[in-house]
Image (cartoon, rainbow, N blue to C red; front, side, top):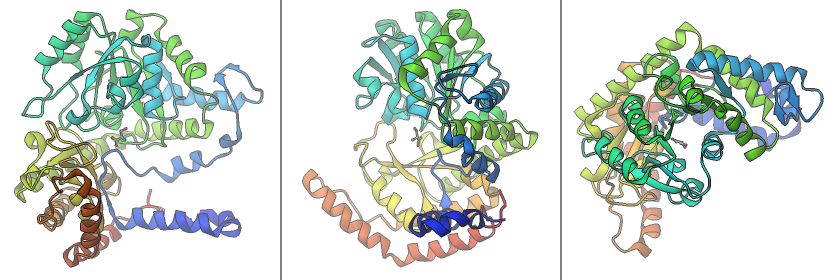
Length: 451
Ligand code: DSN
């Protein structure tokens, strides 16, 4: 049974909502999904997500709920917890965070007091908003110190250590959203241990790679691990917070404090359908074939990076160790990401504009685009397809070369609007779109029940 046939009731009751779901399905089937934080869940995970657990309230934890009727919710939550512990080799896991930002907020609540000093990788250097960026709660309620990457794209450990010794953060983050090298858990652990800080690894982007053995594990080095469940892990939108053996040695109460931070600290009732789907995703991730999947993501990523460079594109750090890469568009002009994103979207390739380290422009008009291979790999694409995709990405980007952000700030929005209108009518991009669709037809997703 394919995806549309499963929605018979919605077809009877709400044609408008159904139509939007079908259009989104078509968009996902017809295009190349290259936002590195996105992926396609299996139908099994989708079924668990759309299950009767969505009807239940269950504030508290297994065996300690405020509401009745939680016999099976308890079992589902314990199933997800046990699988998370096995997947990441940790003694404790909390599977209730609604998503990554609430999970990271819970870590602050469990380890810091408001206004404590915390340290993380700066957002323009690939870090996450919740690692101390000024517009996030983490930069508002805490005193952030930010470390950076060097010109070669690798984290500057000398700076990180100097900052840690000078500011004595209570909590240090390792992990990022746009870092193309392996996360340096060991090096950051040496710094955190020297100043007595908690070290939290945010492995949202690479958690599937870690489970599949395609990225080192943070478990021996960090006290806490957070991850979303919907990126390389291929689960539903959600998150997990784990306490490691090292974390329990530093602070035997740490896991309980994290539990209390999630509920009642930050959240109400957990999303039990999400928990069941996390359990289902972890079961898939623990299978031997997931190892092959994780390694193929990285092989595809390296192949794509090599081919992009062969096609004349500049990459931050000249390559990648993981599932993502950052195209440096300052070779065209600063702030060019907005034009490249629009051109690629017109060509049927979904990416996100992104800051690059030492970006001469702003986060809203950044100078790069971020590309990743997890979703392409889920469809079964391999190195051969990466070669074709690299050519399309390079060609589509070249189509934007004439556009320049105006120097006058007040003129930017109007100029970008006009440029986007032109880009959407560009014949070369429309031709690439047709070629992209043709390739996608050979890698179906939900329409024929492939995944
Ligand atoms: N929004 C996620 C990403 O795209 O990397 C991080 O939270």
